Image 1 (cartoon, one colour):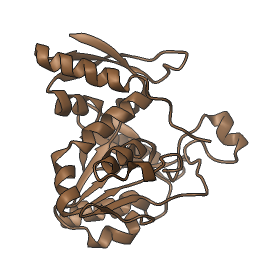
Image 2 (cartoon, one colour):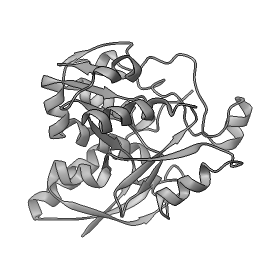
Image 3 (cartoon, helix red, strand yellow):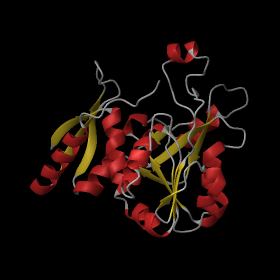
Length: 258
């Protein structure tokens, strides 16, 4: 085993590179529709997927989110809840139909037309790594974007993939956490455990290099807050590929938020 430190931003880039190489994404990019629902991790995903059709330079992830968690002091100064700090100049989700980016469209514009073979990519807020399940904060009375995504996934077999960093892992059963968070009288975001394919940094390493990885430690200071130590194992060839891959994302700067 060789261990590596991965910052949250580096993890987002790694996940994005893995998603861009995902077979279901490649197939939908050629023959169907991909919806990349706005979110911070999905900003990196959009860059990598749009690069496959030569449109990455036309995209900025800077405002590619509907809400984001900020430090409480900063959120208070901006008049927003810590988990719902929004922004005014939302560019829309990234919708790609048969290799063409439909700029300005959102999941709500296309959700009813999605069919089997199409893919929705939606980030998450809570991760049960052991059970490979994820849950999403909901602040919309009709469940917002995940409500539209789940209807397509459950009703029409649209592939729902959940790119989510291991920094978002939680203890406890997600259904129990959701029942408590969603109970009458509770405060803060509601929590929605959803069906879908969880895709983390660990999955990206496996897909891109063949090596296996696990979390061996976490945390840090001086910009390493939220970091994880990943222990990676594999053949010499896989280890070499993994070391090069992780090294290539190690200098990823933090998400650009104003």
